[in-house]
Length: 221
Image (cartoon, rainbow, N blue to C red; front, side, top):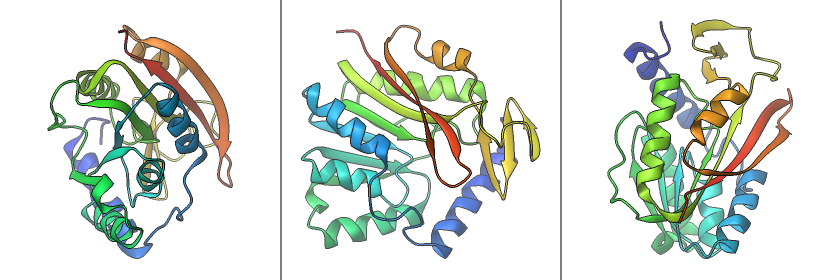
């Protein structure tokens, strides 16, 4: 299967759905370190409305809500979003969180200039072709207001899993059923064309450990 294969996309959707069904709250309830950083960056920029792409079961979306933001949480997993909704109700955050069933391979069903900040933790490095990744970032550009902030994280080509496992082409390798597009630095720079690239921060996460970049870029005013 090639990187832009509909079969690969369908297989990954099904795999994530099974994973969320089998392992509720699989990432825990505490927010990720990138989400904590993003919340502070959004607040410093005066943001009120935040969109999270690839929200999963919601640990980061709920953190943004607790920090006072109005949050739209998008994901292609119905199971993950159902868990997010239940937790939002249980924590008294339902009025601050709107769930959106969405596959990022399709246009965002949101108005232009409707968000102050967008966050995506390891969403862009899923089983997306390079062309699809550029399309997603173009969609982010449309929904962000002028001066809006985009914070995303991706696994990069310095990661231990890069170059091993099942090969799908376009720097996509699959391990244990999860396909990952590992980013070279040139792709980060290309995605920042027309933006203000504020930071590319290297960090590690998990037991492998996974090696990632946290990228912060801003739309010009």
